[in-house]
Every structure is written in C-alpha cells, then in structure tokens.
Image (tube, rainbow, N blue to C red; front, side, top):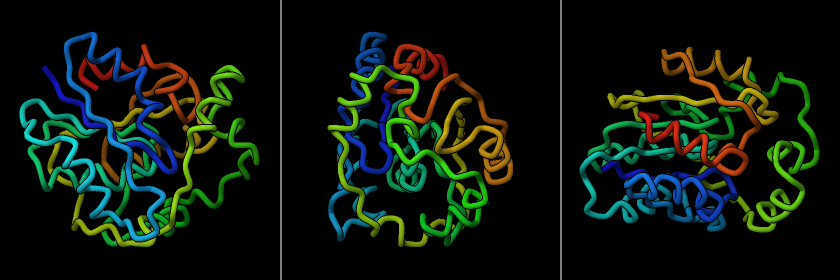
Length: 215
C-alpha cells in the first residue's frame, strides 16, 4: 500500500482532490489531503509544511508526496521531516534555493509569456463543464502572500526520486515553457497528460491511474 500526501495549490481546497483520492483508495491505497492555511496572513512555508506533516502522522511506509502548482514549494520541505519515497509534481512550481514564490515568475521567464486569460474559468478550468467549474470556483479560497514572500530554505532539491507531470493544454503554465523549466531545474524530462491546469478535476480517473502506476 502507498500513502499519497496531497499538497494542493494556491487558494485551493482538499475537497477538489477527492475524486482522485477516492480512485486511489479504491485501488487499496491511503490518501491524506489537508487544507493548507492559505487564508492565514501569518502562515509561511513552515506552517504549510507542519500542516502536511501533521496530516501524515505516523504513516511511514511507501509515502509519496503529490504537489500541485504552488505546492511545489512545500513538497520538498516535507521530505526533510518524514521519510518520503517519492515526490510527484503536477503542473507545479519548482523553486530554486533562496528564491521566493514572487521571484519565481520572473526567474523562470513566466512573466515574458503571452498574457493569460482574465477569467479563472478560462485560465484553470477550460476543459470541464460549466457546472463543474462553478462548483470548484465556489470552493476556492483567498491566497495570502506570506508563503510566497519567504525564500525557499533548502540549499538544493532533496535527494528523493522526483517525477513531474505537465498538462499539455495548461494555460497557466504552458507546456512548451514548463518543459524547459523542469529540465533546467530538476534535470528530468516531464511526463505529460492532456488537459488544463487542474487535471485532478478534469481527469481524476486518468490521473489516479497514473499515480497508482508509479507516478
């Protein structure tokens, strides 16, 4: 049995990952998916990491940390606190030592990309039904800046097996750009899935199958 610890992205909620979690549990795995303190003005990377580690509890065998988007800043920090078999990044930010989440956009060249859509529906959820998009957006929370203003504290990416899954139609993190970021910062070639920035909403069965098969 594998335990998957989900680290959601900015302003998100664990409930949006429940379809993936249900698929993984049906395959005999365990899933923990805490709500991060994204609305707390005082919460930085340590609090985010504490939240994930507390959710993991005494689970220690077969632990995989799965991070989406901004969760890429927290996932590696979890590995410094508990034994982790693998990090899985899904359309995630990959930090450099000493870099803040705010600096990341310029440092990776994202700010030089074409302007993205103004609508959150068109930016994140263009590949789901209007009803599903409305439900996801209704659950979204405010994302405070504290966690993005704090320098990433590690001297290097942890020595933990890491896989990356990008989304070919992602309008937030375009695939052509993200392939280069992943190769430059992690030295690996990302794997790919169809769809937009939130495949755990648009393709939960496909994503769960990928995770269960070694993702």
